[in-house]
Image (cartoon, rainbow, N blue to C red; front, side, top):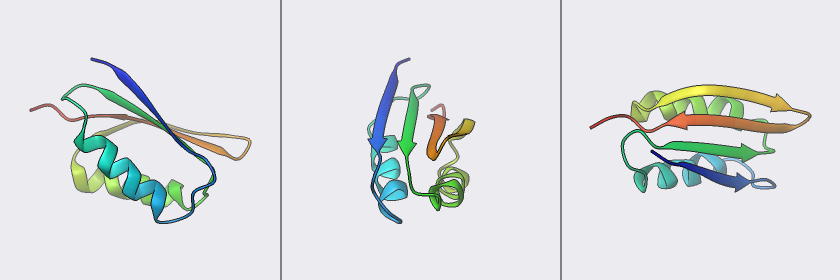
Length: 76
C-alpha cells in the first residue's frame, strides 16, 4: 500500500473532482490518495465523488483555506 499526494491548489470546480477521479483509477486496491486543493466547492464535490466510486474518505480537513482529503482506494 502506498500514499500518493495530488496537489490541486488553484484549480476550480469541476477540475479537482475530475482529476481526483482520474488519479483513483491509477491506484491499486488499498492505496491512499491525499488530495490538497483550495476550491471550497471541493468539500462538496469530492465526498460526492467518493460516494459514487465506493472508495473510502478516511479524513477531510480544512487547514486555513487548504482542503485536504485522505481517500483509500476500495479493495478488489
